[in-house]
Amino acid sequence: MKIQIIEEPPVSDRLIKSWSDFVFNHPSGNIFQSKDFFMLCYQTPGYKPLTVFAIDGKENICGVMQGVIMNERDPLISLFSARAIAWGGPLSTDLDTYTLLVEKYERALGKRVIYSQIRPIGPASNTDLLIRSGFKREPHLDIFNDLTGGEQHMFSKIQNEKRRKIRRSKDKGVIVRQVESDFETEAAVSLITGLYNNIGLPAPPRKLLTGAKSALGEAVKIFVAIFENKIIGSRIVLCYRDMVYEWYAASNSEYQNKYANDLLPWEVMLWASQNGFRIFDFGGAGNPLEKYGVRDFKLSYGGEVVEVSRFTHVHKPFFMLFGKKGIRLYRIIKKVSK
Image (tube, rainbow, N blue to C red; front, side):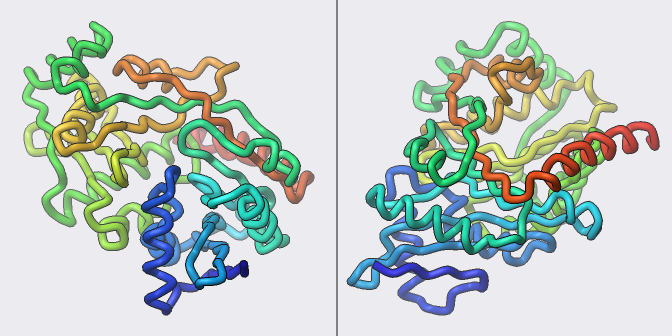
C-alpha cells in the first residue's frame, strides 16, 4: 500500500473515478470526503483542501482523509485562527489504514495550522486510535430526523407550538421554494453572511456558498422563504446518498412575525422525504453539558439526538489560547460597533 497526498486538483481520470467510487460505496461515505467538495474548497479564497489517499497494490483507493485548511483574510486574525477541519473524518477499509491516514494527514499539515479537528457525521468510530494520535475528544451533539414515515407521520412528531408556527407562516402568505436565479442565490447567501456578521462570527466565504452549485451540481439545494416577493429566509443543504445535510441557514429578523425560520426546515424535510432521502442531518446541537437554544429549536421538529463528538489536535497551544480570547474580543467589538 502506498500513500498519495494532493493539494492541487488531480489530473488522473483513474484516480478521480476510484476516489468517487470508494467514497460513495463506503458505509460512512459522505460529501465532505468527495472530489467535488475538494474542488469547491480549492476555488474558495481562504480555503485550501488537503487530501490523503491510501492506494492498494492494484492502484485502487482503499482509504481517504480529506480536510480543509482555513485562513481568514486578515493576516493578523489568520495568525491566531488558522485551522484544518476534516468533516466526516477518515474513510478506510481497516484500522491500520485508518491510523496511517490520520498520521500522514497530520504530518502534511505541518506547522500551517494552530489546530486540526475531525468532525464525524454520525456516531464516532475508532476513537481510541484518534486519541492515541494526539486528538482530544470533545462532547458534541447532532440531531437526525427520520424522513421515511411520510408527511403525516413526520408532522405529527413536531412539537405543537412549532406546528402552529408553521401553519401561521403559511397563512400569512410565506412560500418556500428553491432558488430560480443567480440573483436569488446572492440574496440567500447575503442573509447567511449577514447573520454571521451580526452575531460577531467570521462569516463563511461568499465564494464557498455562491460557487457550491457549480462545483457540487445537484448535490446542492438552496431553499428560500418568500413573502411579498422578498426573500426573508434561506437554507442551503447538501444531498448525498440517502442523507440531506443542513449546511447554512439564516432568516431576516425584521420579518420574525412571519415565522419563515420555522417553516423552512419543515419544507426542506418534506421535499427530502418526497425525493427519496431517508435522513435529515439537522447539524450541530452543541455540547451536551451546556444549554444551547439552537438545540431546543432543532429538537422541536421531532428528531433524535446523537452523540457524535469532535476531535481536536492542538499544534500550537499558545496561539490556540490567544486565538480563543481574540474571538471573544472580536464578538464584543462587533456588537458594540453596530
